[in-house]
Image (cartoon, rainbow, N blue to C red; front, side, top):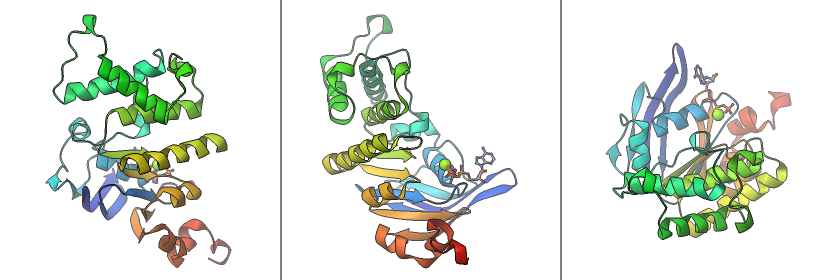
Length: 255
Ligand SMILES: Nc1ncnc2c1ncn2[C@@H]1O[C@H](COP(=O)(O)OP(=O)(O)OP(=O)(O)O)[C@@H](O)[C@H]1O
Ligand SMILES: [Mg+2]
């Protein structure tokens, strides 16, 4: 297993929002966390990336306890950052954004791009950026567009390319299609499905769109008021009566 999370609790002041979360994520699986607004999904993400410290519980990554490691050290260990924190430089073009992400990965892993005044990406770095953009992002004619002028959907796609360029072992996506138009949403789902099939990367995601979850997730977990109320394969979770009641809304009129 890549991630082994046990007994996570988390409070904001007096408000306890996670009540003992256990979850295990296996290599190459797509694991989704779903639940109503305010259930604690983003908080759990923050605890996993190191942006928030849990008040109890342990997080193991490939067997090692990383509960107390700060966010940047987890990122170096292969935790892809979520979209909200992926850095996109508005004044730079799409290609340069991806190049910078690759360079920062190389720097962390011991490579040295040299002094900034002589900085020029190597051919390898440029080729890697081009491949990422080509496969998961944009047609070549758009590579010189400035990131600041992108539409919301295109920006999310660029952030996705920037996250991929860090070569994460676990790609963490907090609502990757939030605020997208139906066609952008469809395209993002298609990209994620391809990424999964072609690279076998491990994905941990939250998402409100159920169609996307059922298309992509191998397993999922349902959070409600900071507690896990169901976990398993999408079909089994969908048919779980408690889940239907609190989340999918099937029985709301009778509840
Ligand atoms: N920084 C904060 N300070 C205080 N309370 C917070 C903070 N962030 C979140 N909360 C509260 O913690 C609870 C869980 O919020 P969280 O954002 O984790 O939910 P979520 O499942 O991601 O919701 P959504 O589906 O709306 O994104 C909510 O009651 C929320 O109001
Ligand atoms: Mg959230």
